[in-house]
Image (cartoon, rainbow, N blue to C red; front, side, top):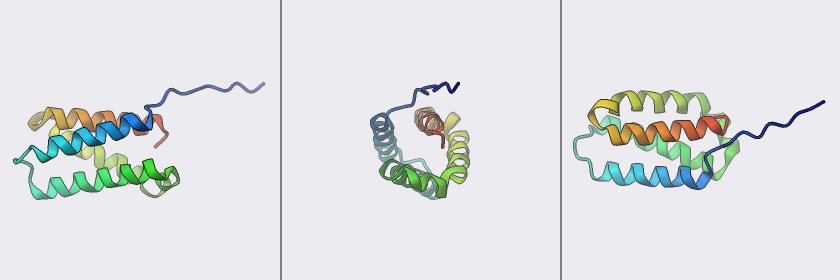
Amino acid sequence: MNVIVEVSTMPREELRNTLASLHETLSGTDDVDPETRELLKSVTSDIERILADEESATEVGDSLTERIEDSMRAFKVSHPIIGGLLQRLSDGLANMGI
């Protein structure tokens, strides 16, 4: 007997909204060093690519998860809002199986 379990996932639109909030918050923050800003641009670009084409998740999956976690650690204390947004993105991607 097969049982289908429906996993609740963060809707794609909510992920897009979280990305938009992250971009907005970053644009209003001047004290993020260029290297960290580039890391965040790379992370958000990969998430946007996954949202456009979920098959691309296999190309960036583990690397993306690690980069998000590194970014979260960097921002949790200095920029808790950015850290929280990254946590929401990480949770949403995890719910999608990424």
